[in-house]
Each structure stands twice: as structure tokens, then as C-alpha cells.
Length: 250
Image 1 (cartoon, helix red, strand yellow):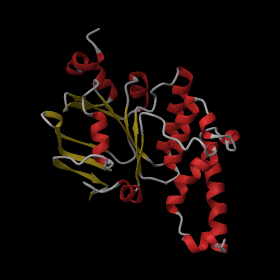
Image 2 (image 1 turned 45 degrees about the vertical axis):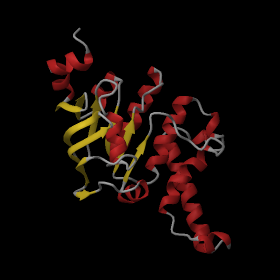
Image 3 (image 1 turned 90 degrees about the vertical axis):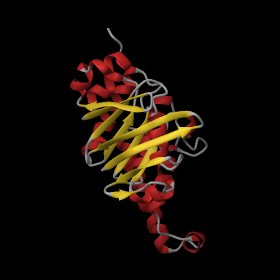
Image 4 (image 1 turned 180 degrees about the vertical axis):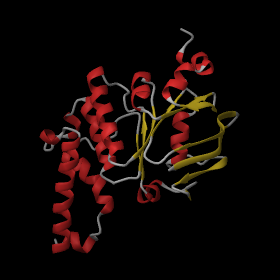
């Protein structure tokens, strides 16, 4: 589904990514781990058009998506979430999800301005579909509340659901468990599994090793901008290079 080939990125004299190659298989959950500064978020920023790599290509479902902008990528079925929860806080919880669905809207300015039948029908569908997504995340009861009033953990779930409203093939999650307590992390793990079971490929950067080892099919380890290894959770746990570089000797 997603393939990296020889990705290299240099900031001044610092090599953030050095010839990184790996793939995330269709229908899988792939984790990317590594110490701070390993290049994990830089890799996500390259995939999603925030940075341009100095060398290498990125392929989505066999198509070269290197240097495409975020709107084009969303149209191809690739979306992401961020380390910090990014919501439209003055809008309602429901409206935040509807924003994601508007990317699939066909109504133009004329239809919206004059409330044409097609636009009314489309608006009704977007609202109903958004409520369905909120039910998936257990947020339906908060649909009319301001997004800014949600607890942090619920805000994280809303951000993920809003991205899913685009109906992507693949979603990139940047540290989705950051700032969550154990109960919220368990809710997140359950949601990620349900998303994956619906047919969406998931790639996540995460520091919560319990979460990564629990939900991921395969794990890629980055260290100092290079790919250290890739394997199953058990293989990663038993890899001495990984233990030394990241998990700790003990």
C-alpha cells in the first residue's frame, strides 16, 4: 500500500533521514518506532507533502506520490493525524467530522447559495454519515458540544474520526497515544483495530511500546535517521540492536 524507496532528507548539515526504504502492506498496521530525533515525524512530513525529500520516492498503491500536495494526497486516499490534537475548537463535534466529508462533496457555490435539491440531499447525507462515524468512536452523545470542550482523550478520537470521514485507503497517525492515560489508550487501541478491520491500512509513529506491541503486525525501527531493522513485535522485542538503541538494556 505504501512504499518508501531510499528516502533521504538533509537539514543544513544534519541528515534527518538516510536512505530509508521499507513498505507498509495493504490491510496491515505498521508501527514506526525509534528514539527522539530518529526521523519518524520527518518521514511522515515527507509523505504528506510538508517536506520535500532530497532523494528517493514514495509510492501509494503503486503510484509515485512524491511531491504531491496534501489535497491531492487526500484525493488519492491518504490522510494523517498529528502529535498535537488539531481541531476546529469553536465548531461542534459533529461539524468537525462533517468537514472531513465535505472533501467528497460535489455541490458548488451556486448549489449551496441557492439551496438546490442536490445540495440539500448531499448535506443531509454528510450529517447522517458524520453521526455514524461519531457512534464508531463513542462520541455521538457529544455531537452538539463544542469540540474545544472535549477532554484531551476524546479530542484525539475525534481527530482520528474526522480523518476517517474522508474514507481513506491509508491513515498515518503521529503519536496517537501521546498524553493519554491507560483507559484512553485502551479505547484508542480498540478504535484502531476497528478501523483496520474495516479495510484501512494504518501506519503509526508511537512511543507507547505496550500499544505498539499489542496492535501492530510489523514494526520498523529508525535510529539516527537510518532504518535499523523491521520485523514482527516479537522479533523487535528480541532484537539486541533495538534493545540497545531504544528499548533499554534491561
